[in-house]
Image (cartoon, rainbow, N blue to C red):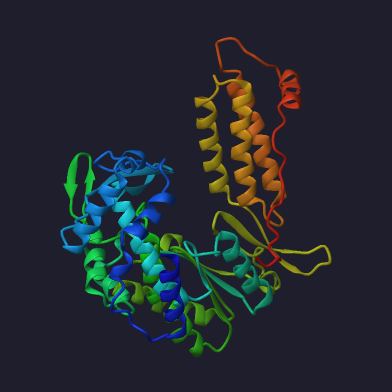
Length: 434
């Protein structure tokens, strides 16, 4: 099955103007079996309560029945179960949990869409793409800031991006390369599947549920047309100075050489977003002076040192190398650091009665995962802070295993010799290409 999708991807790459009119046949029992094998069986279940293990008991029968319903067009997705995930400061993010069978169809649909559209996405767009993760986006941004004529940075934020994607626009964008009516019908049914929240059904008139398997590729298609393609083909050719863009899912940063061009772009951006049913979060969108000449220019005007901005969990700030050359450095953002500390405290509270071996094993797993993401060039101090915070949290919660205090600080340090915590490590060199 991979060969068929690879062939479609190759055709799409070699023929930029090609429109696919017949790809429905690819979603067959073989592809669905492959999707089933690779599906995570530990995910939360939808409103029908069916798990991967239960579906697998009669896999052949279930898939045969599913394919038959697809062929006779009687397949209809069940409503997603909607839950709110805490974001911090009392805010929440809506998460849609789909039934297992619907996840299989979404995964198959995702693979078809990715095969057709992936060859046409720009390198500036990262997130939910093969071999283009957060660190790739940060490397690209670093090149724009250090190696290009960047003097101004637009740190932008779209209000509720996934929740406000226009269904009609999604269909139009998909139809630009896929005009198979069966695929279009399937996407429409998925988008209009509805949600169950607090035991009540609600229609879905806009948006693509976060938690859906194919939501990321639809979001990338949307972002490609409304922002990336527009910026590269319509904005950059008209600029007098440098202009650069990096996008990760719905987060993006735009760099400019001249302030007036940055300001004009932002006004045009707001108008363009409205056309596609979106709105900029103006309270979180800022144009700041940032780059090689920022400190010198601001000092000449009697202003403070250059402002910082946040992107992908890091605070980016102007600095210098040991030799005095301009450098952009990064540290874990205060907001992300505080959020992780709250999560760790809750986790340690829940496992404080476990065996010490299990507590430290789990804690080290969390720490190593944290180091793998935040362990990038120049961020060593933030990693050390996190390790010290973990030590303090462990000391606190191990002394709350019972009414009797278990350790004084000297005794706790001896415990750490027997159960050492993972040491901070820089895993990602921001100047090394992947």
